[in-house]
Length: 352
Image (cartoon, rainbow, N blue to C red; front, side, top):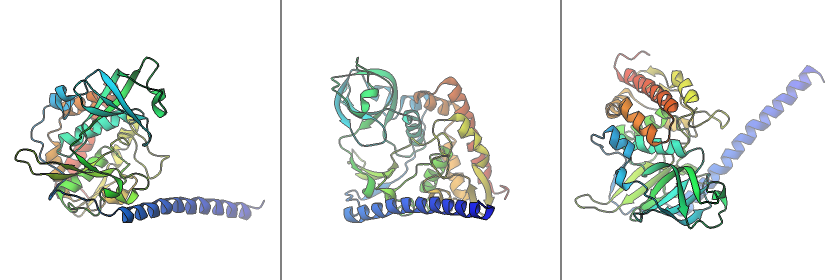
């Protein structure tokens, strides 16, 4: 075989891979659009829409206890309710001693989801109440399907994520979620701050309502009126599992809960400042939707909010997520380095 023939073969192989890649994503985008059109807009009943609320002062101890506090955390004994067949990881629902229902999930995302929801909540963003439970048992467990490898013959489990099911909340998922480029908060510090938080944590799975056929990670939760608070629709991220590892344009480069890989990308976190725009090295499912048009003013707003998260807060959230002492040290140092980069980039004298 001549060198020219070999080059031609390599060209057609590369072209085939490239074309196949775009056909694959084109297929899922088309399916998503068809589903969105068939289901229509989210049937919101709330007149008030929010994406962020000032959380006030939250101590490190309160952050470690979680949004429900230590008294609202999952309380044993746990009783089996049902097993779920959807989602990427095994999952069951249980009822705890207080009568609350929790969705229990296992797999490689349990640590990141707990930390992500803790940090989002501490900074004023809405998140589902989530707890990491290192071990326990579930009574009344029948023969299971996907979760049979997660609960042994004595009904014991380890390393699980408990997510609260709130019965009075109307949840709008997938086709009724929201898009990064099309929502009531486009151009606001609050939305751009959420984008910065996603990049801060290297959460590469930023699919939105345009990806509903593959599963959108944006949602709208409607909370009923309570006391002096009117009913409101809260815009939030419902999956923080693909974080604290390496970001990347393809699945081969991405990771999660990997402190070394996470810290290794610190040098690419902020790549520069051009005029009033801060440039980020982040890559994910929808890279441009997060990286484009983030201004110094947006970063400065986020820095003011994030100043409340001291190293003690980060350590508390990591401990609550099941991190080891070594992981806690590495993640805290890497997150602090990124927060310092954000602070420097927000200053008017930030280098171009």
